[in-house]
Image (cartoon, rainbow, N blue to C red; front, side, top):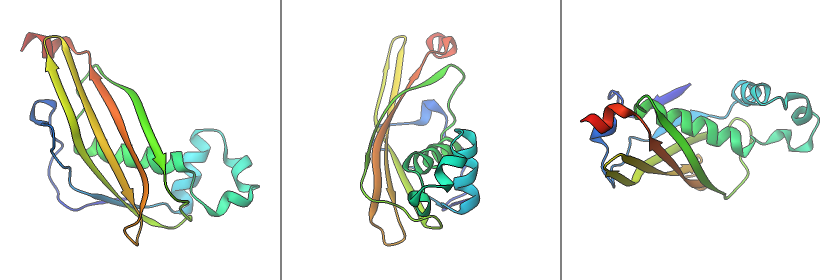
Amino acid sequence: MQDKDSATPPLEWEHLISGYEFPPVSYEMGVSTVSQYLNAVGREKMWGASPLSKFAPPMAITALAMTAMTELFKMPDGAVHTAEELEFHKAVPVGTKLTSHAKVGRKLDRGKFHMAVIELNITDEENETVITGKASIVLTNQKMEAE
C-alpha cells in the first residue's frame, strides 16, 4: 500500500531531534483504502449514498498518513497521541496518489516529561498541498525515566 523512498528501519525515540525530516511516503487513496477506513468508522453506507463519495474523506487521508508515519518512527510503549491540529486545503478525488512529508517540529525531554510534535504536509500528484497539521505525542513510559 505504501512506497517508502528509503528502506530504513523505524527511528527510536532517542534518535528523534527537532528538525529531523522523515523520508516521504506515497500511497493511493483508492476505493479499497477508502472502503476500509469507512468500514472501520461505521460510515460505509452513508458515504456511498452521498454525492461526496467521489472524494476521499479527509480523516481517511490523515489516518493513512499517520499510519505511514508510525512505520518510520517507533513509538515506545506508553506513548500517547495526545492532540492533533489539521487544516484541510483541498478535496481529494478517490484514486489520487498522495505523498506525506513529516518532520519533528519539536522534541522535549525534561525529567519525566517527554514530548514530540510531528508536523505533517500531505501533497497530491500535482504537488499541491492537501492537508497540513501537527500531532503531539507524549511519552509516559517509566523506562525513559530510568535512563
